Image (tube, rainbow, N blue to C red; front, side):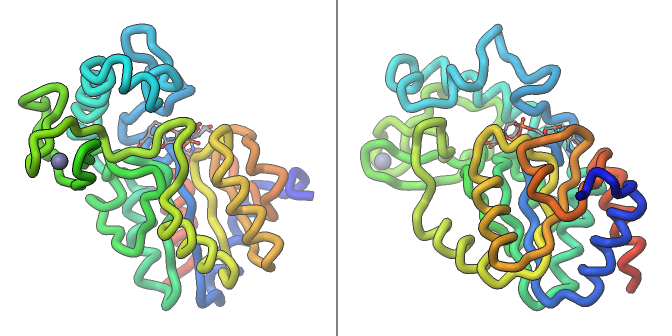
Amino acid sequence: MNDSMSNDEALEALAERMRTAASVAVITGAGISAESGVPTFRGDGGLWKNYRAEELATPGAFQRDPELVWSWYDWRRGICAKAEPNPAHLVTARLEDRYKDFLLITQNVDGLHGRAGSRRMAEIHGNIWRGRCTACGDVFDTPETPLPEIPVPCPSCGGRARPHIVWFGESYDSDLMEGVYRFLMNVEVLLVIGTSGMVSMPVVLADQARRAGAFVAEVNPNPSELSSLAHAVLRGKAGELLPELERRLGN
Ligand code: NAD
Ligand code: ZN
C-alpha cells in the first residue's frame, strides 16, 4: 500500500495527521544520530578493533573482560562527546511543545536527544553517560571522557560498575516499558525514525500502536522491518526530512 506513495505524498499524509492530532509518539534508533557522526552498529564505521557490537554489548563479555567492554564504551563515548545534535534531534525536541500528549521513545544511548532539548523521553536502552554498580545497584553519572579509570569503580561503595545500558540478552526496565505501552495504547500518530528493527522492540511497539488505531510513519533511507507496518514511508535522511515535516506542520 505504502510503496505506491511518493515521498511527497507520504510527507503530506503524515503532516495532515499531525496537524490535528492531540497525541504523538516518536521512536528513534541509531539512524537519527548517523548524520551527527555517531555510527550505527550495522553501518560503516560501526566496528571497533574488529569486534562486532554483539560481541561486546553482552553480560557475558563484561563478565569475561570488563576492561575490554569499558574500553569500547570509552571509545564510543569519545565519539558521542564530539557529536552535536542534528536538525532531526532538534525538530524532535520542538515537536514536544506542539502536543499535550507526547512521548519520545529512543533506543539511542548517546544523550543527543537530551542535549537537543527533549524532556518527555524514555531512554529504553539506557544512557552511555551513566554507570551502574553491580554490587550496590547505585546509578550515577560518568561525565568524564576519556574515563579516568577502567573498569569504572562505584562512587558509593567502590564495587565494580558497568555501563547503565540494556545489553543484548537482557530485559528492559519493566516500569519504563509499562509507561511506554500505556502511552501507545492511546496515541494517534507514531513516527519511527532510523531504526532497522533488527532489535525487535520498535517493531513490537509499532505493531501495538497500529492495532490500537495509530497512524504509523517511518523515516529511513533504507527498507527496514518497520516498513511493512507503516501507513506512510518517508525514504531519506532524518536530518533532511524532519525539517521538511516541521515546515509543513506550520505554526
Ligand atoms: P541499527 O544500526 O540497527 O539501524 C540503523 C537504521 O538507521 C538503519 O535502518 C539505517 O537504514 C537507518 N539510517 C541510517 N542513516 C540514517 C539517516 N540519516 N536517517 C534516518 N535513518 C538512517 O540501529 P537500531 O535499530 O537503533 O539498533 C541498534 C542498537 O544499537 C540499538 O539498540 C541502540 O541502542 C544501539 N546503538 C545506539 C547508538 C546511539 O546511541 N547513537 C549507535 C549505535 C547503536
Ligand atoms: Zn556500589
